[in-house]
Image 1 (cartoon, rainbow, N blue to C red):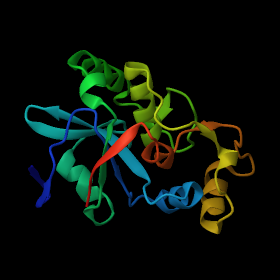
Image 2: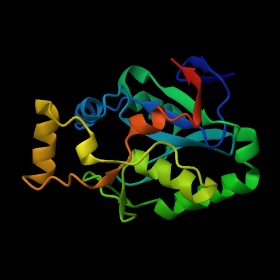
Image 3: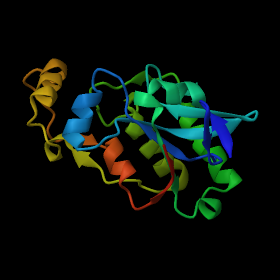
Image 4: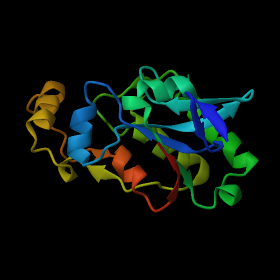
Length: 190
């Protein structure tokens, strides 16, 4: 057991995926559109006996685990792990995951949620690292038109970002799709 932010938590492992409810201005719209409690996520890495979260914020980079947890609503987080992680996430695969992640480091945050490598948002970063390094697709890709865009908060945020040109056929991966993936098992929730 580890102590993080004055809480006893199970041991984290490289490659674990951590979820929280962001306190950003777009969090509520993401939650409503995707029907999920969680609006932000990242991948855990251990380095020099400290834990970090690789995340897509402005810019894409790493944040100390304790700091990352404190940024979330109420310090609440959920930790999930790929099924059969010991077998799938060999040291070689973990090195490749880190290389893929490093290739995105410093890129701008993608507030338009476009499916490209020029800019990235949190769930896109996690999905692409797992796809490119482990060849696992965690969660199903969707399109904007698959989300519930009916709530006024969602409509307001979409109008602010896109005006009248909503990219309804743009590929997207949401935190909820990854959170609900049967590829993952829950390790911890506080």
